[in-house]
Length: 138
Image 1 (tube, one colour):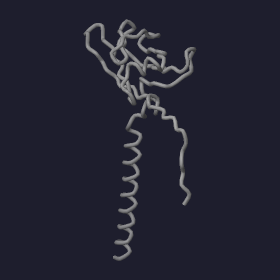
Image 2 (spheres, rainbow, N blue to C red):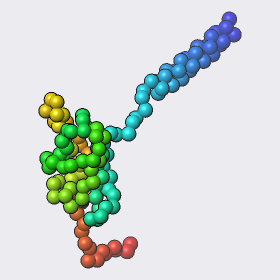
Image 3 (cartoon, rainbow, N blue to C red):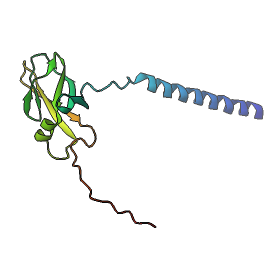
Image 4 (spheres, rainbow, N blue to C red):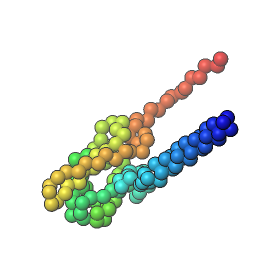
């Protein structure tokens, strides 16, 4: 009788463990992989100094694109790219901004689609010149 009870407990623990592992693996496999964002911003070198390379998607190749409300010309069809000088991004953004808004207009429905692009860290931050720095000794 005791042997049967011990065997039953072992079997139930094994079945529970097997079911738990199966549920965890099924939930991990059932979720789609995180795809890379369809829009991104990165800092690159260009002829005039530093530029912000923006890339994204729009509803059609004739859909206009605006950056922080300013119309810009982009290269590409539905998947587009834009090389924007950092001085323009600074002029069109608030000081210390961490993102910009890129708006595309669907030509068929005239609906604006706004996407927020995260800027590289510290891109629009202020640089403080230090005359000297005092570090006290302990």
